[in-house]
Image (tube, rainbow, N blue to C red):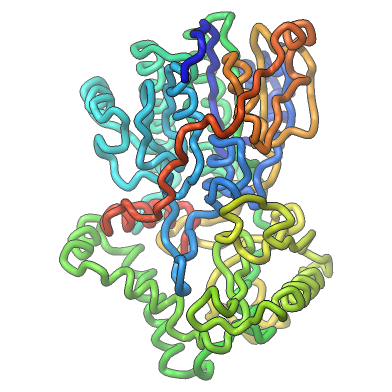
Length: 558
């Protein structure tokens, strides 16, 4: 189905992890002139992310206008259909049509660059280049692949968003050199695409804003200033992008979530073990537990010290070895026949070991609700040992916040930490003997596969800024959700909106006269194309290992 072509265009710059906690002070100091100009010309506000405010769920919700219970992407990993393992999440896990496919079918030309969780890239009416979850820097990350060849021919290389390299010591000067080089390349390659390929909707993501906040949020002096400098440089490149768009183009600045400091680290597995929900198969000093500890320490040593070339060689020479070690570390010492609940991820996900769902399920349907309530009540009582304050704001059941066919794959309990300032660390071998029983650790962690500190994490409020011919000077507006961006974007392009989206068109940003003359048009959702293939396969072992290593470099995987 096609709609009449219009000349309206929308330009979107995403600052991954962008937060007004950094932006507003810099704007007041006059250090982000281009962002300030857009805020003064249009509308802006804090953009509520998904729960949890995590990259895969948030960006997929942006691309679909649907909650994770419908599109099926919750975290960096997804539980296996049977058993107790987890698989890496990719774009193939998304069960719904994305914005890019929808616009392409409506004869709109799109360019989407560096957007996380678009690998493998879709075949679109235009250009798509995958972001940080792409396994390797090669032509398959682009659609069509020839665009990758063109960029390499133009710039001599293609640079993925840089993170701290695995296996190397922390070096501030080298970090900044790579950071600025990556930002410059992202701008230069994006500008090349927007000036050499036709587009109606252009989107580019700067991931560096997120990376530096993870590393430097609680740093001091020169290191802490890297965060502000990253925003300043992003603002300069925004100004250069704006020179390439005309006055009839709608401009949006968005982020997938916000950022803030890690105030405490909580060992959720150890808590589940202490409360009797996660049961080990042997005593603390058993050979099994010792083996698990040795395997984890050995894995950490190899990740930090082996050259990347050697690790690649080992993956080819010993296929499957990595998976076996990961499985050993995750499950070797757990007695699943006695487990009631277990965790996953870094933001507080708990799965119930239900009979009929898992091969060694222990919890009956009759006991399920009572167990969920019991665990939730205990979690709500957890206190920070240094302040005495309770650290859990709320514990959700999956159906409290998610709806749709994919809810069955969601965690049974989702912990919303107060202000999302608690980082959930995996592992049963945390230090014990202190007054917390080993439940809390120092808030400054080192990512296991690297030597750089992890001092910042995500917050639920991201950013939204809009300016353009139909956007009014509304100043700050409230009650914005990342789910609203899909229908709002379609409206800026005068496109019909599927009538089943979870978000809304943000009417208050539009000029009232314009909105009255151009109300949103809706079409039945059953006219959409078939949903995306939701299979979790599609990655080779080498691709999966490469993606996992990249995510570990950011602290997203253990």
